[in-house]
Image (spheres, rainbow, N blue to C red):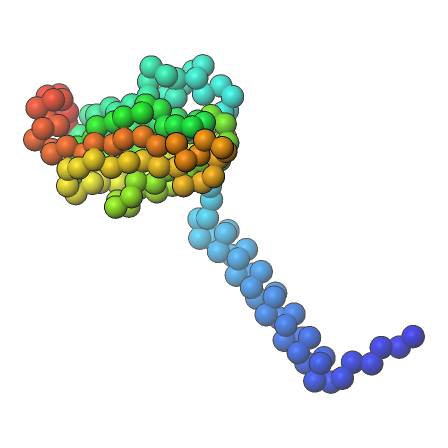
Amino acid sequence: MAFHIHPLERKWLYAASAAIAIFLASILLTALFGGIHPPGHMEIIDSARLHLDGEFMEDKLGVRTEPDGSVRVTLVAARYGFFPREIQVPAGTPITFRIASADVLHGMHAPMTNLSTMVVPGYVSTVTTAFPKPGEYPMLCNEFCGMGHDHMWSKMTVVSKESWTLAHPSAGR
């Protein structure tokens, strides 16, 4: 049985195939040379052992001032909350958030700021940002993570740099 394809249909078939090939090649090249990767630059972690050792142990979570004056926040996202539940950070200071998921896919978003990231189980999500002015911000999960997703939030208080320095006299020294 022979197929007959009209010449105009054949031209459209070639054009559509070429468009698909160009589209797939651009995705592949962008992924290879554009640095597209999971959050945290592919830093892998065993989600089942988060609480047993390393920086995500319960007593190591929270806010810490680095020797260069920057601030590092270590959080764990788990059903249905971010731990620790409340943090305080200084305004106008580079703050690096390191977040790991203990269970399923989560997202972390602080409305009215540029803090937003996906928290993928098995990876460490790293985001560095600075908050220009003091205030209180909720940190919400923006990925549906289960029936308690609506209640997954934490509180972040951004204080003035002066207040931070008074409360943490060794910060940046």
